[in-house]
Amino acid sequence: MQANRLNRRWFSLSTAFLIAALILTAACDYTPEIVGADGKVPEKSITKMEKVTLGGLDQWIVIRGVDVKNPVLLFIHGGPGKPSMPMVIKYNGNLESDFVVVTWDQRGAGKSYSVDIPPESMTLEQLISDAHELVGYLKERFNADKIYIVGHSCGSVIGMNLVDRYPEDFYAFVGVGQLVNGARNEIISYEYTVRMAEETDNEKALEELRKIGPPADGLYKNNYDNLLVQRKWLLKFGGITYGKTNYFDMYMDYLFNEEYTIFESLNIKKGLKFSLTNIWPDEVRTDLFTQIPKVDIPVYFAVGRHDWNTPFEITEEYFNILKAPKKELVWFENSGHSPCYEEPDKFNLLIERVKTETYKQ
Image (tube, rainbow, N blue to C red):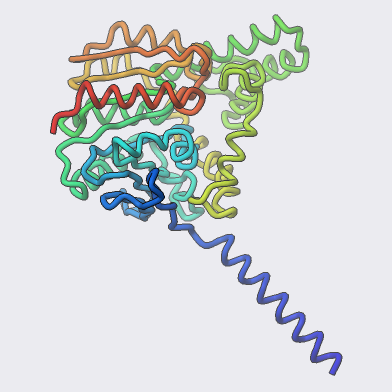
């Protein structure tokens, strides 16, 4: 009798653990409905999480908007490998009133990370190709001639390549934390951390930074680990997020949201390392000064005054030489690398103004 009770308890515990494991590891395909001020779900709204095949690989997108007839706005995240799905929904949710907002976890990132992804497929060109395929899918799905695109950090390189190659697909492009010249980017960023370490007499920082040495052509020796050392001190010295010296808020956004399972949230670090290791050499070879000196659509740059991750001075220099039918550089005085999340109200107003200035039905 006692043995039977123990067996039943063990079976119940094992079943509970198995169910919990399945919940943690199963891919989440849910995003909450949009509820209006009247407490009702707008009749024409859309809230969908979908798995789409891009470049032969399953990848995840979230689509959210009050009215499916509004223009599509695609966010392309940076990193490479640092998804923005939870942050865009949290900080830029107001845009769902004026756009059908699409966030995409790129191959190797967030919900789209898998140990089965061939490392050789992780290239900048493949990401650009995936993005182009996604744009085509969105245009067809929403019967749209054109869409809007926001590119953040490394995603801004993907975005600039898209609008350069396929201008007919877009109303306008907004670059956030715009990456312009990868090699110069890393040298200036490294020099900033050394300068701040000297000014604050931070011997530990100086020791670690001198040990890794400045990047050669944008790349550090033992690139991934040494890049993280430099970025650690860049964060501590306020060159990534203005007024903050850690990623606590971002970690909380990744852990506590309705679009990721806990397992998917914990997997983000794996995807970031996988993506950075394989794609970063492509990113640092970027030189928009020579590669894309002209575009045929309106371009807006949202620039953090305290951004030393993609140094603001390079973006300003590029803006001055870039030829475009319309261009605007908008300063965010209380932001570092991510004005879209650091000053979301001002950023959302910028995106709404972009629509006012460029949208033609």
